Length: 315
Image (cartoon, rainbow, N blue to C red; front, side, top):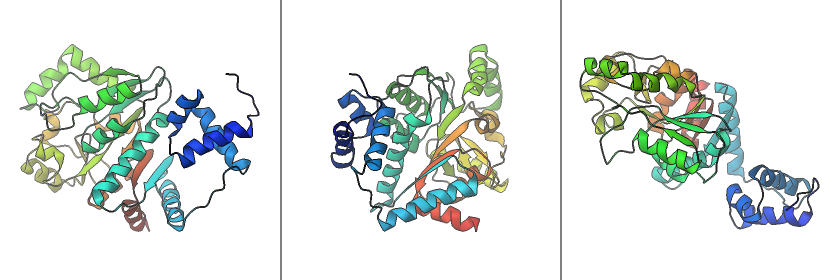
């Protein structure tokens, strides 16, 4: 089908109908009509410009847009997506993950290398990413593997995101945490693992969530750290955990005994990547503020309550 530089109102209206009335996403419309996704985006813009679609913004959404603008300005972010509260915290978290999943195919570009972290949030995102091939995309596992069938592992998150984006998947063939520091040192010195860790620097982008330094964090629940480990790191000033690593209120790394037993990306490596943070819940306020202060984040998807708290703290 040949596309004109001046598409008819009929095709523009059909795209608008499928998007605004039928509720199809851009990828689904592109597949149904044999269009590229950028063309769908262009037609949606033309629908507004030609007044085929009239836009009325409800009052609640002015608040959401103002929060997103405030976050971008305050923390120097490229993009910020703020999700309105649902009836429950669990439903809100699901919607945050859905928004992040829909953004991910636009976040990565052909030829990028995407680093993927682990946890419940990243797992939900990975299961909802649209099926959208990205040419030349490589997806790398940022943290070693965890032998626990109940935990959404970094390996499973990496594999699923790569599958949905038709990307090359490269897993990190090592445990996330070793029983003792000497063993971790020897594994990191193994040529295959050493090369995999070194190649994490190829990642120009990353997706991750974070945790507060509390005893109910996944890091403790699945035996990556003990409650004593958490207490020790908190005593040293830690307020949050990113990709298994601890940070203080300014986002600076907090080094402790657990770090010597871990195999995965160091925080200085993560900071060099263009980071997409996906987070929900007011209990993660301190950790989120620390990640933003530490320049780990270029793009964020979060809930309105958390966004308001971040901006309230900033004033």
